[in-house]
Image (tube, rainbow, N blue to C red):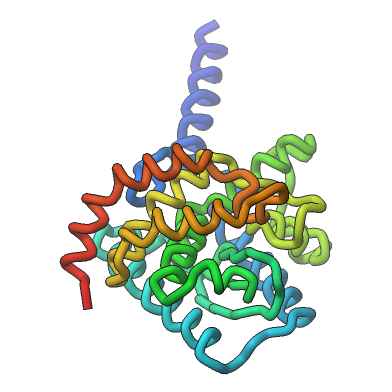
Length: 273
Ligand SMILES: [Zn+2]
């Protein structure tokens, strides 16, 4: 009898150890999250997927807009890295290799894959209007990657598909690179509606919150964020852009952004250029 109890205790302790190991906190918001796979694996798959997107896309390599996307991306990435280092959270960007590309495509879209692989579509540029508008979107998309929403989303999808936690995604990258690439694309919300997994509203709100702070850290005026989302909603119409499909209700979003603005303005005033 005693033996059984102690065996049980060992199982419970082992389980707790795994939970603690795989449980981490999202920077800035402090939300606890459990991940089912190492982020490094998702980063490897994303890198393959990103290359595949670039191979088939019409990339704009020079000119004011392409340079702007790269400049804003680098500025926000640098600010985020400094913040994470200061907070002792640099492991969050381990293995990141930032890339920022502008793709010639009418889609009103932008995304950031695990590991810092960013794409903007020319369709979103008129709504961004200027560099600060690009920074609103950039901050939001980079936040998805820093918060590891892709990992959570893939983990959930694998569980839903019944593949559950037994799946060895690392092995998948090696043996079924095509499947791994598809999963990584889904994680970042790339590839249109088909097979697309939406970020949850919780993820969207979290990215709004982190994104507005990130842009402020990089010296971009965060009071432009509510204005950008306003412009975004105006083009919504009957067929809202993919970027808006699962986003919080416009009124809720505006209200949330307004609440975050005083803190973001404080950060901005310290980092203004
Ligand atoms: Zn989003």
